[in-house]
Length: 309
Image: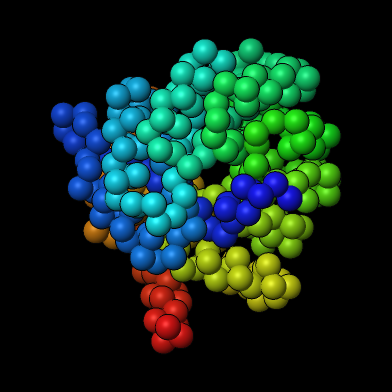
């Protein structure tokens, strides 16, 4: 495995972008959530990705969010900002800016809209690797981009580019298994899918990059420990317990429900940006009903961790 790949494992949390009424990033809110997540054992933070509403933020807001996160984390865990631009020009400019700001790695989505071939995707990341001297994390999310990678393409990217890790959001388990067989020994593959998390870990994923871990970091860390140590049945049982709440958090477009839930938790995150709409009253009601029991499970794992320490 590439030496740098070993830095990206466990539960890395995708964080939302809180904005003030004036449109600036709410630095105090960023610090409060980041401090909480690091204290609760997060293995990394991933701001300004999909959960961070990259495509709706201005370049200034993206940089504000990254700077605030880097300051809050203070080098304690990796900070991996998302770069979700569709084409090469904006991607390379943003990658260079984020790298210069101090990002540990860059979560770069597969190019979309132009609908490149598999060979075109490899060439794209080769060029990016030549232009940016920073670890890259490949981001595959076909249901958002319309671009699915063949396992052989993942293998080529792992061997021919600066990619050291991957956020895998392809729910085709056969494709993911083959990708892990081909490239899992070279890069750190992380699942981005809460709904199949125990299966991806059992197949060889080295952790997850998850949005809902900003709400339940201890539960997801326990699920990772169980599944990665071969206790898959226990992991599946715990997973089944929390999935009704997780499904509620995704019943409307991410990150709306997560922002609403964080506000309920005492971590104000503001509303989503257009074209998204604030979550419905029905979703807020369902969250208020679903979250307490799952939060009790979260607190129980936190108490166990404290006793062990």
